[in-house]
Image 1 (cartoon, helix red, strand yellow):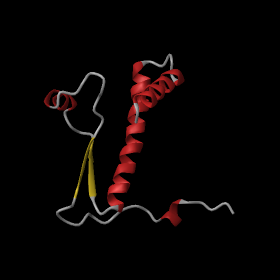
Image 2: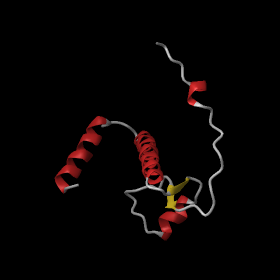
Image 3: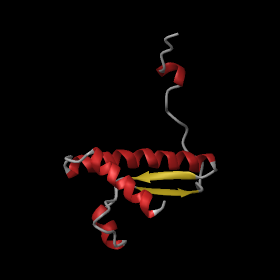
Image 4: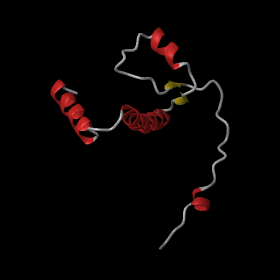
Length: 103
């Protein structure tokens, strides 16, 4: 992304939520990060990789260890690689048990 595009994107985001408190903007960013992470996980799986998202880590130690700027705040870590063993079978319900067809 070029600098001009980046600046326009930031300006658009700031004008969308001009008076939103920092906590609200962080909640929006956290939600967006979850969507982006899921897309990365799906792409990785499609390409034969496995993923492990981790939200339960010491964020302050991460900031200190990796010298993260105050401009950023860590949300999750995402491991991507090849699994050492097959994953557990899913416990999700089949789609036909949770979707209602209104035709």
